[in-house]
Length: 70
Image (cartoon, rainbow, N blue to C red; front, side, top):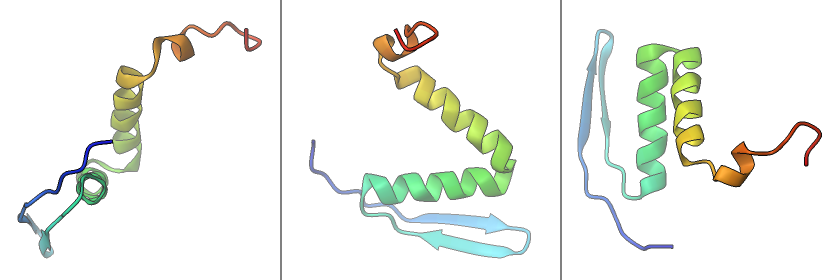
């Protein structure tokens, strides 16, 4: 696993106010991105997008499993 840090200052303006984020790790950045995606597009659209990302990076073996687990 690689070791690195993120130096970012994210500012978001919403109709009801503002949000500011300063992620320091890829995990924190991902949580912020998912939060913004859900707020902007709704939970179902966000879930669909995230499912597409997982499908894109799924191992080929997992995608080729036959019905019944073989």
